[in-house]
Image: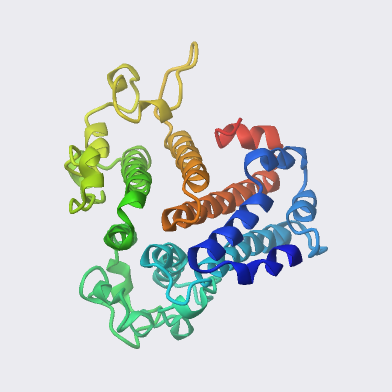
Length: 366
């Protein structure tokens, strides 16, 4: 890192941020380095590999919780260091960094609604933080005069400032609906931030975010139907009906899609226990394959893992093909988020007694 820092003063703006991002990606457990994860068998092995300079002697369950927290903390720190390289960071990058704040807010609301007095672990996004997490569990005080205040007149309209865990108003809160509204708000804000990108950068970023929103909608549709037995009408309420901005010519290729929930809406017409009707559906390749002598049933987890891997491959390609650009740094953040999910999944799999081969197979990683 010392050698890298020597050249920092020779770079400025996006160049400096990209150089830092490239250095971080080179040390990540992705690409060729992902094979290193195939040689671990215990949580202690994983800890030594990922945190060689910060090894701790902790027992089983305690070690899992500690490793997961450190994995997230490291991802946040690295992403923050890149975004903070700018005096005034591009809105797109700030939006991506704030995905941690969205996740933390969802977790806090879930904890409060469940009567959990202990506040979940909160990610430190420094000067970009807006939620007053120190006001927990007073959710109204936490989000008042922030971009999340809309919840107090929407999904959390029965929650007033000063209300605690025991207030019966929490019993009527639809947590799934809250999560949907926050997801919609996040992606809507992300799309709005595209306006500041140079024309030549917008196409790659547009494809990535369009595919991600479409696939995320499909995952929601699968989960709601398979796990919660939601009807078509009920499921549609939880989909993000978003469109790409149409102000720039680079979006022409995408304008044929009336909405980024078109594919998920189409999926509602297909049965979850018959494979043939899915032929020709846009995201068919991410469905779990048929097996000889086994009745096929749609597996939402398989679809989610395959879709996540696809988005990561797309981000990895775009990161290297568009150096020194804002869209490349957007891809860097997507890559780091994927690595965080990957390492966390490996840790959880090992804690359940799985070996690395089984974990990689489950995650659709060859």
